[in-house]
Amino acid sequence: MEKPLSNTTFTFSDAIDGKYITDLYAGDYVMIEETFNDVLREYDEFVDRIITTYHESDIAGLKSAVHKIKPLFGFVGLTAQQGQCLQFENGCLAMTVEQRADAFVALEKMLRVTKPIIESEGRRLAEFNASQP
Image (cartoon, rainbow, N blue to C red; front, top):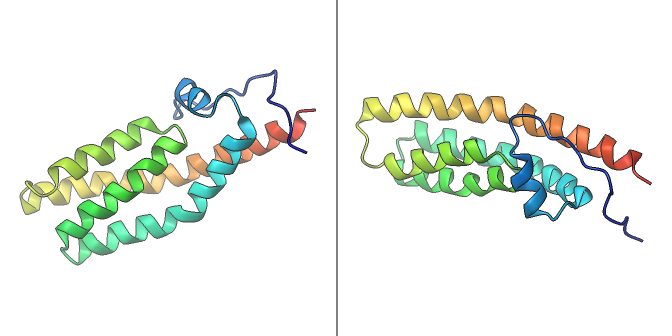
């Protein structure tokens, strides 16, 4: 039997667009928690593909890999990260090698610091959901 939607609200960390994600899942915190878990299962594979295509100088593959990870950020309310991916995706083919290297360094840093945010928020959601009647 599924739990009914909670009458209490979860307060997301500042990195997460709480209104966006709550609206997206209609306040279903169990579904949000499941989505965080799903994103984490896929995350490393997506990031590895981005890094590999960059180091192979496969710019079309890099653009495609960034395009594929972009929705994951939206699924978990990380709209700023989603926007950063969109900006990189839209510009990477036109960038010089130096510009692309600088943009990639920033993108890779964002990807590395974002996973712990998703993990932490997922744990917090699990604790919240477990405390609900």
